[in-house]
Image (cartoon, rainbow over all chains, first blue to last red; front, side, top):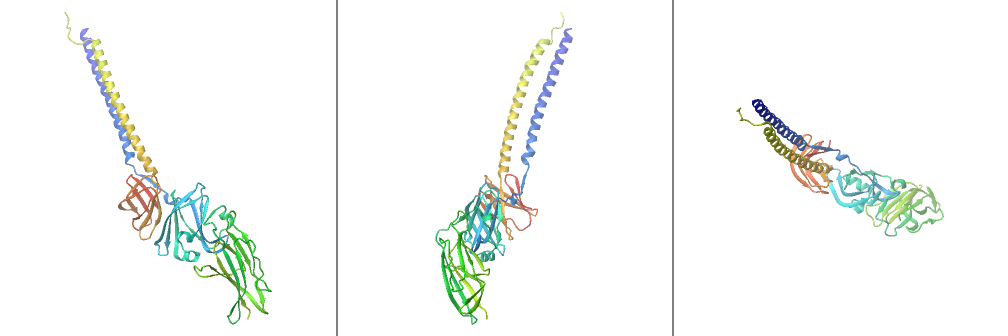
Length: 286
Length: 126
């Protein structure tokens, strides 16, 4: 009996030892597995893509705003409405070199319009386009957009309710003169009208008796002091028994910046963002 | 008299119980320690993952002369260690602080990926 008991005690110890060994083994295995489970992910390389497709803004460069102008304006829209901050601009020339860089802060919410001259770019659309193939804008949030060139000015719906920078700070005088060019090529000024941007009417008959052009001033941009001066020229006039036909408007900034420019429609909607000299040119019918 | 040598069942069970308890405590302690290590490792990995996820690199312009204008739009400092241009690797060591824009000569190509020291591969242009 005792011998059987002794044998069973030894067996019990052996069983306990085996059970413990299994337990310890299980613990070690579990710990090893949990460690090795961590290691491969720690060595993984995370792939992030599509960063280059982030676009939170849309930007356009236009000749004038709402109306014709010799100045060039940059319009930036925040597409998502959270507000964007532009911190970097580059200009890429036609040789694909970055020939212009600007570190700046332009807050855009929901949109901002800036005169390109104020950013260090050439003032006129043609010169800007001839100098820079691309203008690229980067925002603080990581948006990148290439500026789109558009020769026509944006409409009121496209820029409302943008902030225009700089706001009109002074009275801009627009001097309009009627020039008659006779068959011999001689030029003759036969009328003049000075319009001021605080006048909302600029309707004076000059070059009597025919009296072109008729003009009127209007507030073109809601909540902004900038106005539109709309001038309408007659296609034909008679002056001192000679017949003249409309040739175009010759427009230049005062003081002259990039030379003068022709505008050929009889109705000129001028966005008054500077001081201008305008010649309404008629040529004699020979 | 019979043979009195040997261990009685009661003593055997008592010793076995004590030893089992001792080893179980040891094993439990080891297990807890191990779990702590695992948790710490997991937390450390999560931190690393967080850093990785917060990395934001943006390609502003890649000039035909091979100069890439890259912005760090994230919140952490990034070290560019490799550039892959059309699959060709170029080793680099360029540090970009948050908000900074650097010009990196990565070479000419059509696709660009950037690897950082945190092990993130930013595909900037496909």
